Image (cartoon, rainbow, N blue to C red; front, side, top):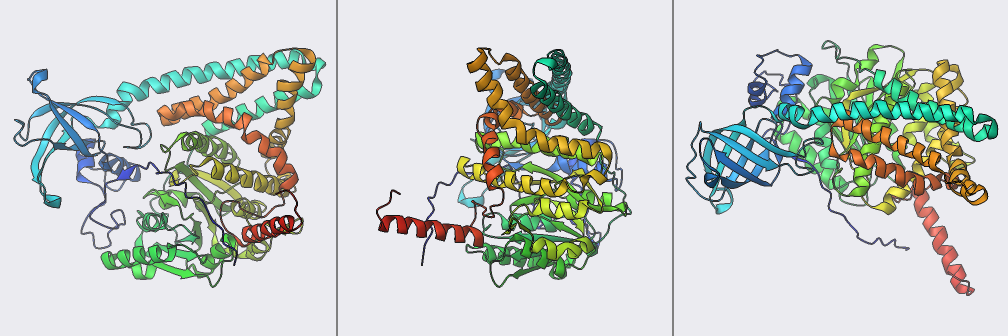
Length: 622
């Protein structure tokens, strides 16, 4: 038997770690009305009174009350005392409204009710994106106690900030980010328009090149324009259709428990939500992890009918992600089905937001927003963080303006069950140039739906996902995505012209521009300097403006220090990812994943090993 050996080059992922709640399903509406979802600390911080069940108000409370496990140095200055009286402590957890501290000694001279000033630096990953910053904030001591957990006594101090960190950041840093990014974005757009005016002047000297530059600039600017005009479908409290969440799993032992819990722990009516996990014959400990989480939820949350709402099945053989998804849809009892990847984690209000566009009877599918969960792991994950956000909040939002989103992404998407079943056979048996289409399942199903129905994007339906943190895995993923993009774009090109005219125009431009990009780059950065001796300053300035648009949009909307990685991504794309496109041109019919052992990957490895043995037998070079 042939064994595939993999080098263990595991990277420790840096994740924001929420403080575990004592309740397993802390956000599920309580049918017995014994407790409420909103946290008392968040409600106290709002100081605006109780607005009842208003979804936006409750979501603000939830954001304020979320606590995160974080350990960093904190300096406490008692009110009215000098610098010498300052105490040095270490954070245990932090929220937008307060902090729990570990102190080095007992009786620090601070008592409950005292006013203090806290000085600390929130490190990247300790809280959600945008909070990484130095903070000097006034606070009140609300609790002092001794924690004897673990056999040792630790002196703890709880403080409540006089103003939430959200308000503090808005005044101290976020406001500057918004004003600066807005002004620079306006300047970048004007500069791009001036450059394109130059293209018109020199159009007669090279019609093809300058026509491409004009079209590319127009396409890019319109994406940002329609992305800015995009608005969510607001929540209708009366609209809560039945939803079945399908989680296909293959060798995701590390993340599957968290995925299941996030899907069950939804602020959604108990009798209208079910979760179905379909394991595609994993070869790791995935099934054991699934069973452990299901047992935990069943044992600790009986009042929420979890035995009827959370089930799993294991396929008799490894058949691929599409088979697992269809199996889950066949088991589903509700009319809407949500696909969630096994390494993706839903925000507690994701499903409530995701279903709202289905109030339109012609809506066939909806994509949620996917953020990067392990964003602070290394440079590779940071550049993906900016790219993911722009791809969803700008690019998909622009397509949503025309109700024609061309890819309902795998981490979080919702469909009408009847449409999935209607296209199931064609989806499962899809071939391209005689080869099985194994990946690109999300783009493929989107094409089936988009042909007859509308598709849209809901930015408030949020999930986070684990992205590749190793360069090799990331490059393989990008190659797979380019192949599926080419294949499915050719399919969509056959019917997209029937859609809204502007959408069709932008689709075809969006197809031509990336395909032609390698040729244009070679012409500008190699042919022109070598043959004509002209430095490609204008072309490089155009690349800089493209990077600036991406980075500044991220800064404006996310207020995060990661915005500089928009520049990094654009450089990485131009010098590395762009050159995958010519390879994809000639290999886009391939069906191997490259990052997991699907039947096609195993078959390809066996063939490669057979060729290696044959070459060795005849003394051929390896």
